[in-house]
Image 1: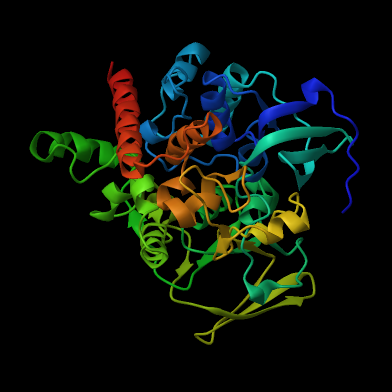
Image 2: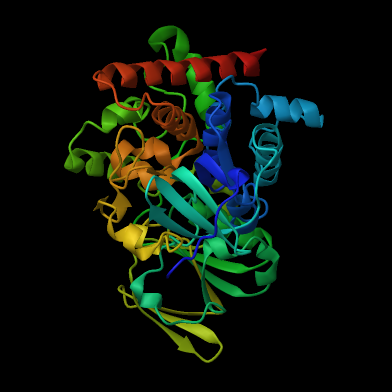
Length: 432
């Protein structure tokens, strides 16, 4: 795509352009703005959460790890609930989290530009961003905070089948549309189990089909109780704040700067171990009337009139009205088509994900990636909201000229201390 860029006005230039206004984009915006960096933020606030998460969903992250990061800890979930006059919920509904994110955005990025970025092209000294109305903005740096959209994984068995009969879980927010219909949910993680529960409660006839066994995690409330029990004895040695991954790897997950210094093979093993498909125990009772076919692989899926016929490797078959793929996401730079093809070709990758520097910078200078795109370089925490503060601090240091130092390990420890302090402050405010 050839881009003709007109002469830009001074207000059409910035030091850093952030593409995406979800938790990561907003956290980066809060930190950069606090450091007096000239930024522009593009996108609709919390759009992926609003348009691609099911109504009635509850967040699985513990409360203390679900605050969107800002450098002064002024905009915690507690502050939003207090201002809104709402009681603190035991489990956080997605609707409240979306409202919280919008409330956060109005405080850190009130000038949010809701126009879509349709193309990013590299040029000397930075990047040209072409917007959906034809306007252009020049930025010295670009932060890709575009999240999971368009990276959903669809197993090959379902290639070519119409979306009306086979869809991904991110394509629906309203489960009631499946009332009275036979639905096969494919997957075994949180998305699969919660989707199945919501569909069942909406009146659908649901079955979960998964290639392995369902694995259950303790829910945030139970872990908080356990935390209180062991705090006096083990000083939280077994339970880190974000609660990502099993012991003893969970504390390593809390230090993404250190994880970056591991070998690629070690990082891959850690990510595989800590990001395996699991569901939180509070879903179990909601699935007691939902049949689960575990240890089954789907050999073939084909259209059968206005239904879908499935053949399983155990000899079984299913004929259903709809297949819901709760099969997760696989980030791939090639799917980031807003990046000019020549720009994408210059990005070094590992397993489809960009290889990132200590400042979340790709092999293309000035082009940064955060969130799930950073998991291959920084580990599992970057797949969760809790990792946004770390990413925001690193990018801010780079943007103000302190991204490369001769004491990376010292910086990593400083980041870990800052994260621990932020969690501690949040915890004290929650308990007060």
